[in-house]
Length: 65
Image (tube, rainbow, N blue to C red; front, side, top):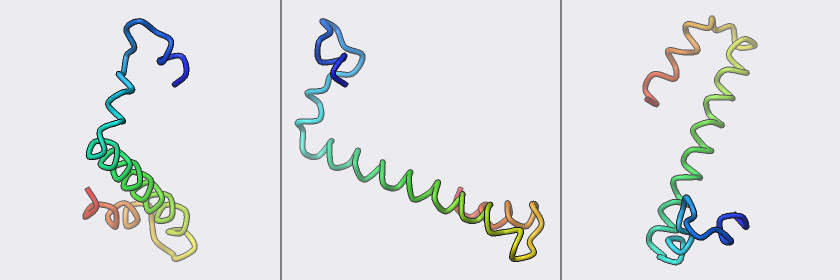
C-alpha cells in the first residue's frame, strides 16, 4: 500500500477508499468472503469426525454456491 502511494501511476488509485459508500461495501465484501471461507474450512475439517464421506461433505457446500 505504501508503495502505491509513491507511484506516479499506481495500479489502484487509493483515493477511491475516501468514498464512504465504496469503502464500506468493500469492507462488507471482505467480511463475507472471510465468512464463506471459514464455513468451507469448518465443513471440510469436521466432516470426517461426523462420519461423512468427501462426496457428502461437498454436497453440503453446493447450496452456498
